[in-house]
Length: 493
Image 1: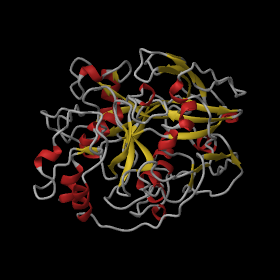
Image 2: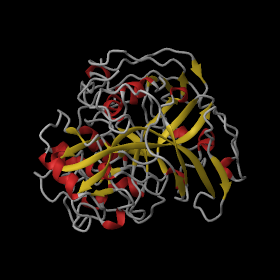
Image 3: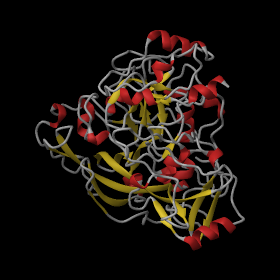
Image 4: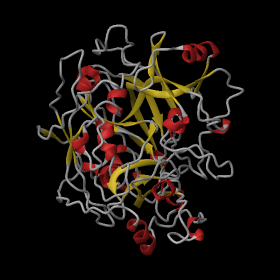
């Protein structure tokens, strides 16, 4: 019961600097009432009181994780891409630990904070460009950044509703164009549909949809007096329906036929780790969920080979186009918390050094993590909101998202706030309300992506197209290529 109570409030404090938290609703002897109140000063560091942290840790099962300190500048990626050919039964994801390293994210000597306008020429045979940075005094960051984007894969995003005017799940101020699909006929078909797979997915008129109830969400909050705007579940029994739609990715770096990508928005809401314990990226449940690893790959022993992000978002051929990336897990930059062993993954989160510092400048982020950088702010899909991701108080339309780096200790992980600051204190790994914003390296020669226009840190963009146009994706006969999602009940490779 204590863990359930602890989980409710861990994100709130993070927003204002005393350590990421969703607002811990804890017993009086553990945390005093005044400690859960939101401070006014948003510039306060994300540092928790040592005594409070100690009390929280004593409630958890403590396990010391021996971490091997690795060195390296930033993550590097391999050119070797592997795929299984079995079209009917897909095996579990295999973690590949070797390959020829390519410096896709080498250290940069670019000017700090984009003081001078920077133009990065295209290095891609596909015509994609690196981020373009120009000085702009009207921006909090002092610069405007424009990224090229691509469509690749698909994931549940927009919600299908019978009537937009009667929609009450979200405050209308949080809805942007395309967040809901008003279609009474389609809604009726989904209600009447009898064939849903084990992961509550089905195909109607060539498109794939996912259904979920309140109990399927990672986090829910029915407190109408909350300062935060959560998804409003009117009851616990009604299914809500979400359409698989193409995923838009920002191009952070392109090098010939390989692109380093970050999802344009928060796509889901997941815990960094499903238990409150000492953890590193290597043995976290979020790494296993992202990549479809089995029970041997995470400390909790959970098997994600059948239900995971990579299997839901990408078809078999699309998965083969994902580069096995050597992920460097450095220690926390300020606190020195051990990052653990390096890993090899196809899907991962960005690190501290990839979101602030000199090497992050070329990706479009300012070098200071304390700057309210528009380039680091993120919107979210309607599905992510339904899953429980937390919006900001000041920037109500922006959402928190995880990084992979450890926080002030191994019971926490760093995240990005709604205002675009990165605070190294982090949030408890058991937090329920941080968004999933995946990153990956894509082999562009697969031709399974399409150009999606541009987005800019001033929230202006020029979107184009939608979905895949490149050849056979390896989907089963009758499935919609790339825009339908891979049934997550199948094991992935």
